Image 1 (cartoon, one colour):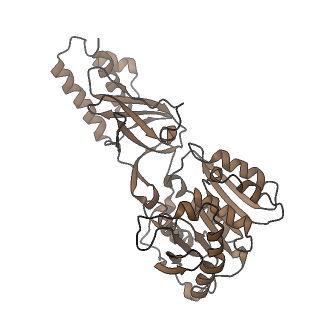
Image 2 (cartoon, rainbow, N blue to C red; image 1 turned 90 degrees about the vertical axis):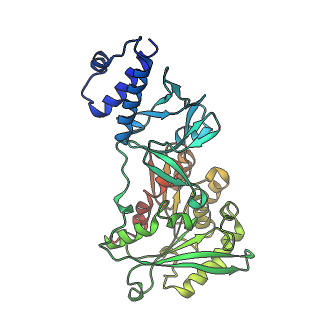
Image 3 (tube, rainbow, N blue to C red; image 1 turned 90 degrees about the horizontal axis):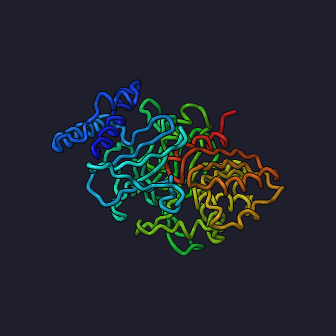
Length: 402
């Protein structure tokens, strides 16, 4: 009987895609392979079913809230690592694959919210990490955007249309790699500036300072330039100027200083106040008022956005906070617990291996002070696939045309 389970399982999976009306019992009855079937014939049938699955581009198989991860290859052990198990830090999730007897096909069954989106990889023999070879979807991740993951898209998850570049609209321009020699920090750094269409005739405009600016600009990560063009063209926000800070050394882009600069760094705050903001305001037509200036960041950048806005409220009247790393510096909660600061906050978090617990704690603090705040949670993770889909919401919170 060892061939009965693998073949019937594969038949069931294939027919779940091609003929979802058919019952499992009917499939088994019609396509059942006898235990004594010829081994060569069985292998041919297995390969045929597998190729049918591949041709649909539907691996992993998703039906409603259920997922069947599949991998075909010789291995002693196969498991799936990703947001669903905290990339190995959450032992409660069973991520170990099961080998279908008599085949080289491994599977893992799981269940997720119908609107979830998750990053993952296939791990072979606890050593080799692979992109899922049968999954067409990728999400770039990591500092600098150099590490793609496979992407699981549940049936109700949709990528925001605002992320699609349109040739039919006018596009803003980017002044790239503006070099600043910081005396306060003691080193050079770059920043980039987005200028909306026709800014020369628009007078002074609101501004947004974006940490991890390289990632927010990158088309495969934040894709924020496209978002800005589309929002302004659709008149969903007023024209704004956006300053993207690059934490990578100008002469050695592999050296990223974000973990130092964004860790509630007092010197970095002084750099913003004394050097960066004055430099930007001397070159570009931005409004100098605090309530017309925002800061935006994710993870450590989200921590920094909260830190800057509450510690020095004369600098930023708005703070966009995505999946904040508040637990990295828990003293942030005391700093933000000021009932007299009328700061606008827009905060987002994923619910799967992300910062929702830390964000909810901050939300309870914001409820008791003078802040105007928006808070959103999504069935997503600590990933650019999460953050990019919510950038437009934050910008609309701050700059909607009224």
